[in-house]
Image 1 (cartoon, rainbow, N blue to C red):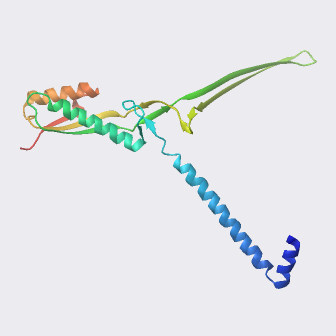
Image 2 (image 1 turned 60 degrees about the vertical axis):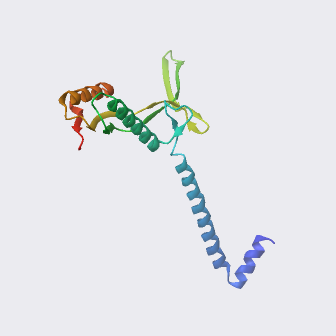
Image 3 (image 1 turned 120 degrees about the vertical axis):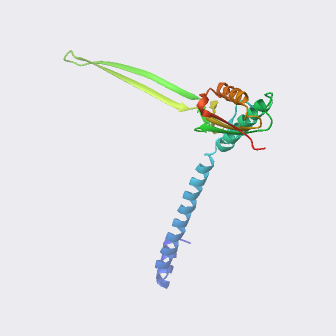
Length: 194
């Protein structure tokens, strides 16, 4: 059926105005669906996974990566401190500055274009154009991560059995200070309740 004949049929029945209203509503609905799907597909690309330096091949998201790093540091410190002679049970809290930072590989394109023009009256003009461009290297639709920088430890709070002894408290403070390269006043050691 021809579209003009169809419109004439609708016009003769008085339905032409309703037809246009329905058509507009359908087009707006399709536009909303397309726009919504565009934004949801972009939102899924936000959780880019990175491989930590300690565990090759195991991918962890940013929030999980920070928690894993924090937990690993806490467990290692508890293990080290509990092996010091005279120290029993140990509880540790570590404060970090910032979060995990992933450094992507960059592709740099630097070019210099020099053009020398001479006009008919004997003058010369030299144009120099510098083009500097950096792009993130992408593999499998994800940025290629060169390295992962873990957050810096800014303070440590320790509660330990045996920490009422000042000599042990000093040993704990010096061990943690040297381990995380933080000053002594950022390490707090207290004795545990009995």
